[in-house]
Length: 246
Ligand SMILES: [Zn+2]
Image 1 (tube, rainbow, N blue to C red):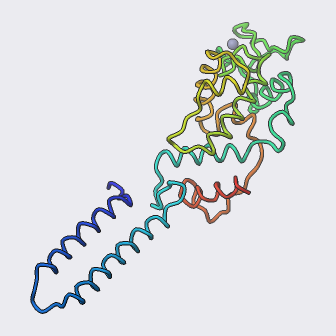
Image 2 (image 1 turned 30 degrees about the vertical axis):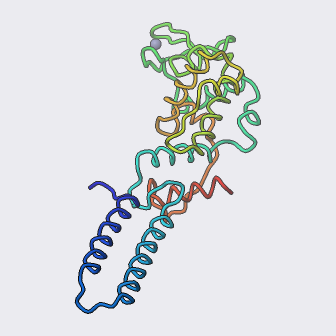
Image 3 (image 1 turned 90 degrees about the vertical axis):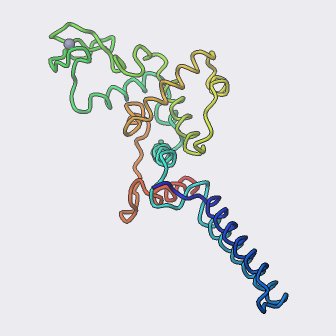
């Protein structure tokens, strides 16, 4: 069923009031002018009350219906990731690309090493070049192999910082706003094409469950949503808003 907006309600109320007022004005069966004026005033007050109620019951453009729009649900995703970012920011925890690769390595193979090419689990220990070798297909690979950051070991800190920036900004943006590649390029000191490609790549990865691999790497803090709050509902949305404001 389509959801009614405040505008729909206001239009419907106006239509009914006009029709009713016209009927009263046309009837001359004993109603005094004073009585008709008071009736008009009462109806206008009612309409104002209805509009006030609708405005009061919507905050930050979010409908107070129990079912949120897909944009609000996406915002829940970004706000959750933002709350999970480390205290003091990503650089406080991972100061350079080497520490980022080490961390990605630990997160990616949490459930055991496997070959990204053939899925075999018979893998030789990490070499001095910090790569693994699959004993089945002889593929040499590092933590970033076949991931969103394939071949970016030396620049992984840029990926981590860019992802942190995207999360923080998307968490506070309405569904009508987007991150401009021009702005993103300046913030991260990148060439325009690189910035545009990285922005698209990271946004796609971060929209996966738990923020994808990059999300699982940088969003490691714990948050406890009160058990009486239904996840994905409007109470969850407002709880996250308040938690981010705190
Ligand atoms: Zn293999």
